[in-house]
Length: 217
Image (cartoon, rainbow, N blue to C red):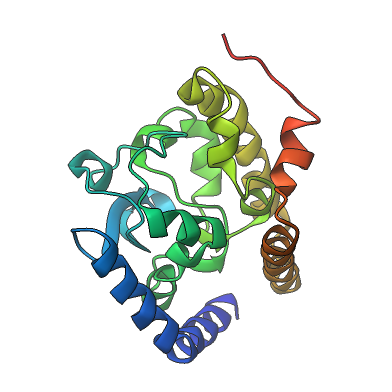
């Protein structure tokens, strides 16, 4: 049932959003040199690697496509890429990943191999399900780049604080997943995006930084 849900909604989304996808692709191409899509190796279900698609929002960096993830590094983000990342429009090509079966609409966000290797025991359980475009961790850490940009050592912050919290949420999803729960997560995701854009506020700052200000040495 979940797979049927994914196929129908991802196909419908690609069809309905096709004019917007074309406009975004043109904007990416005009704004900076390089391909329209950013492709990166991620770890999928049962540890099988796959290529994740996004609209390119940064200048080219070869190691990034090979799976290097630099927490908090926004130095290469293009002018229009800032808007795409803030609105999550850069994530729309992942509907292709959902349609071909690499991902689900809802599920734990896929990581690159080097971060999976940091907590292999936790990931072993999490990777029994397809990774998703959104989940509760995506909602809570909606703007994680701004969080990481505020600490002296963003890599350590991600490894020792943020990633463990994500893994807790991923594990909770695996243990309690349901079609009804997936629908609620999709609705919450849309709500967070609308609130963020309308108020100009960052809900992550309220739910994470204010409550758990952590100094990373």
